[in-house]
Image (cartoon, rainbow, N blue to C red; front, top):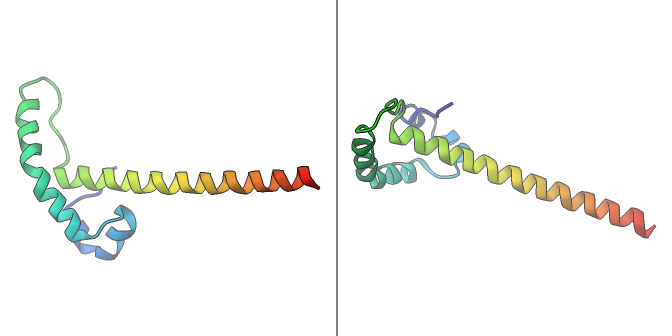
Length: 94
């Protein structure tokens, strides 16, 4: 699944929650990375294989979404582990 970069400006309130950054920051990232992305695309089309289906903005937003989700999961697991440790410690002491 990819987050369509062209459709993101319609939902600016959701972009911050999903990606962890504001829409204008995403625009500036896309502008900064576009030259190197286009250079890499030209080099990769010399080889065999499928062309990229999504543009840079969609790939970047999907990556940021995954990273934001992954960090939240790790924090959740860390909090769960601390709670289990504390409960286990209370059982041993009592």
